[in-house]
Image 1 (cartoon, rainbow, N blue to C red):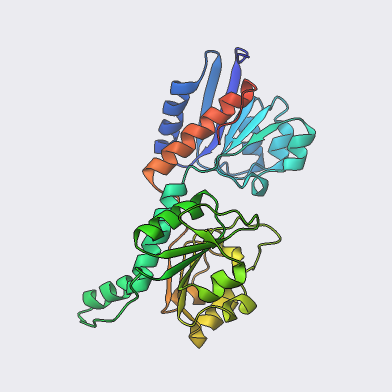
Image 2 (tube, rainbow, N blue to C red):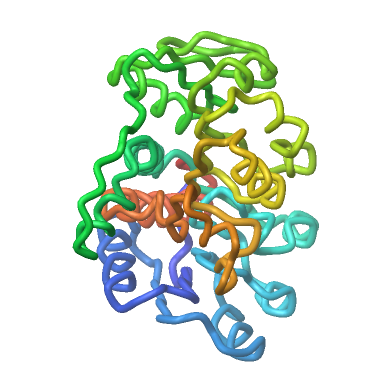
Length: 317
């Protein structure tokens, strides 16, 4: 099926002029005749501004939250293509479904980027790289012994696309990789282990679960108490997978040798966060996905999903 002429696709919240240019380039490469693209740079400041931007849209490529009032005002809307996987956090899926609006998401675009960031955090945490660099800049020469990864056990909690890529990278460093999934299915180079074994027998535990009511705070005081003393914990998935207060207690007690995270329960993390200030914490501001390659793939797939939705084709994920 072809797209009807005079179809309007709106990007209401491009983050920058560069992003807007990238949207237009992607659109020019994949859009059929008869489709107009309208891009607005920056998040609309008011609900009224949102309504005005999307009122006559047939399709929306969404970067931030679409206010409920704007969704109701978009009476022609047939498809929303969300740039990521967490669409439920950014628009009312029930209201969209009730109106027959096709909501599409983009997955897998940053598997390599997040996996590489995970290994980067692990390498830096294991060898104290950031602290040693800071000490040198301050005029101190304080050699310290770190953890060698070769021969150590890497335990993965969750084994989706990112977890599988982390397994491959860990194995390339000579690590013994085990993984737990709710399905019990794990592919090489990891082997399946029950969660209790992953936590208690791993030198490094890395979290790669989606955030659901069942996984919220799934790593708390009870789970941390079973971990090998001095083990490292990595979180490049979602901040709320861990009980941050329990992580601090485990660091203070020595049960945890270090915690590296790219994600927090509250984002942006509040100034003066005791977690960020802890000497055995290595933290980054949710940048695991942020590479030029991943961002280009995200924009391209988002545009493709929107066009596919307008033509009733299969989504690109």
